[in-house]
Image 1 (cartoon, rainbow, N blue to C red):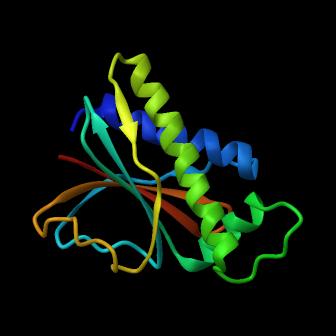
Image 2: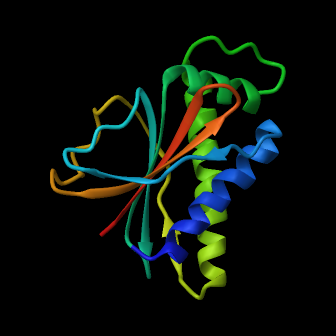
Length: 154
């Protein structure tokens, strides 16, 4: 995996989190996950196609998802992953992926993204081959919350 393909996702994540939370997060050490892939409690999957093909999975604990949904839905008291909280997490992932697609376009790569899919745990990951490899980039946001950006290039 070329680092110039990965950086737009990191930059997009930090830019979006900064705008949403006022804190871009602290990038942790990247690592490789090999199949079978298992995300955290809450995850959003966005596929990409065009000059690059694959998936990005934004994975986090339920507590982190509730925290981010609360930040996203200013003025609403979010204390569980209700439909509105799930929708806000999907929109957050969509914004990050859109920023990444724009950054990739500046590298002369045409990338289309799919609508986000929300999943709980490992349900909904039937598309992931057991031998798939994901580059995982944890981003620590306020406190011990970790928002993970997991990339798989086909």
